Amino acid sequence: MNPSKLIKKKRDGHELNVEEIQLFVDALQNGAMADYQVTSLLMAIFFQGLTFQETVALTSSMAKSGVQYDLSSIQGPKIDKHSTGGVGDKVSLILAPLAAACGLKVPMMSGRGLGHTGGTLDKLQAIPGFEILLSREKFDHVLANVGCVMIGQDEKIAPADKKLYSLRDVTGTVECIPLITSSILSKKIAEGTEGLVMDIKVGNGALMHTKKNARALGQMIVKVSKKLGLPCQAVITNMDQPLGYAVGNAVEVLECVEVMQGKRPFIEVPNNLTSSDLREVTVHLCAQMLILGKKVRTINEGRKMAQNALASGEVWKRFLLLVEAQGGSASTFDHPEKLLTGTTKHVIRSKKTGYLNAIQSEEMGYLLVEMGGGRKKVTDTIDPAVGFLLHRKLGSRVKTGDPLATLFVRNSADSAQFERLFLNTLEIHSARKPVPKLIQETLT
Ligand code: URA
Image 1 (cartoon, helix red, strand yellow):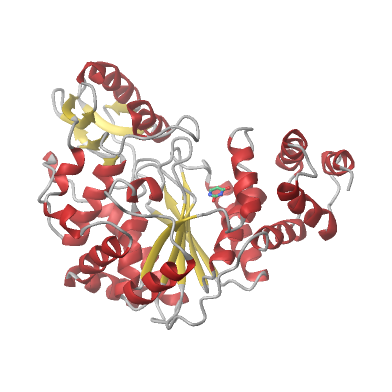
Image 2 (image 1 turned 45 degrees about the vertical axis):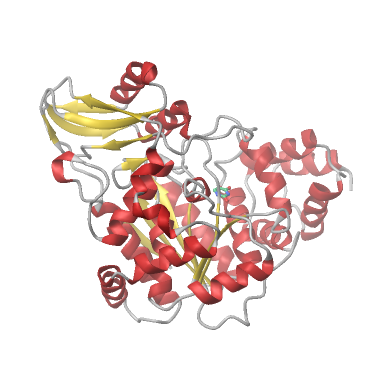
């Protein structure tokens, strides 16, 4: 293979054949292409796109670039969920034990925070001792016994995607539909799931800012997935504001604990915020998973099953089993507020009266990064205890002096700067604007 010929072919808008795509994927591992050649090809793909056939070939080659788990010895339908990422998106922490409590097996492979979006792995690692890299035997054991397992991508699973993603992340080539499709699906196919529900986030805190792009991404994922034999449904959900009221790794774990326990013992949140949007998305995605796993026939039956499981306390029990099985301790949750130890609270109050009409969610995500709760470069370590709680969501009436958020900061000298950044993310007007619909569309 001559890398520069491959780059020129894509640059000029021609279709790469299956052999060329395989050579490209091989080159990611055997060094036949230098990083500057790989990133040139990525930029050519970013502008010229990939056809459906090319996307299928890239997904399939990347899935086969490492080990492929065969989960057939584990009883029950194996169904996973994946989100394209958002601010405050903590759904997976509740959904994995919830779907398990409803009788599914959930082999969940998640990612770290990227840019302004949080990552499930970082939230899980806010729980002391929680291990996200498990041996194959341990993975099977936890999945079979707890009903769900939550891991990160190790060196063996879709290594070509790992290499490609790290280059995309630093070369402005993340927001590309065929590349996102092949990246997500290669990992899901390698992990051995039998069905996949995709949560495609749309809005100012998501990778896809418009409904048109979110739909195009969802349709591509569903089509490629089907072609490769993985049943998949995609749900488009809104991300014009953080999901739930907590943003930050430990505070998001606390919000999930509250939803799973059905009470609010840990954090005092004025204005009776209820995590209702977080619950709604979680229940809806669980219902879609139950349909794929043939546990129910309709979305309403699925929602009912999920709501009953949440109310029964079974989900909380499963979550504790999962934590124990993956190296943490259930006793952490005797006093979960200790996860915030070492931080100082700072309440931000409104300088205006009116309606909260817009939240620049991407900027809110970057505020968390600025506070130390996310990464600017892959090698950064994050502070799990910092974060913030929203006291108001879109559409709320606000009066001057009302609390808008509580920040948990490591160093109180930084509070004034973070308050300024936080207030810059909000738009408060005298006339109320409609709040975008939370669950927008399902693509099957
Ligand atoms: N998540 C992934 O795993 N890959 C992408 O390309 C985008 C989001």
